[in-house]
Image (cartoon, rainbow, N blue to C red; front, side, top):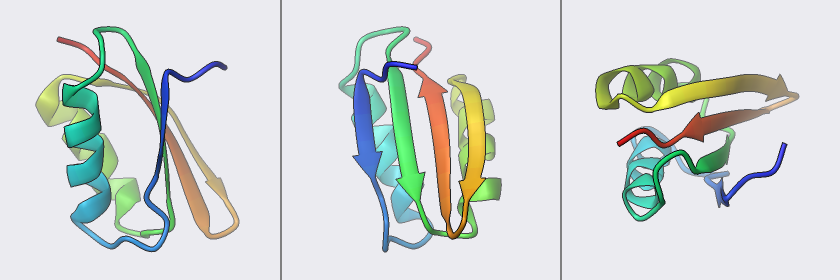
Length: 76
């Protein structure tokens, strides 16, 4: 999958990964894909909730060791 933007939020704790993703998505074009990588365990709850509340589409959610990767599609 090709991403329009990648956000490295490693080392950041709740709520910073979601806040940074929100800010990045605002600047992106509609239907663009953002890959968010974080090691915050709360992200597995926070990111899907953020997408549901904001209307963005969570396309993928994956755990790789201590890292979590999310792919979010910006919806206007």
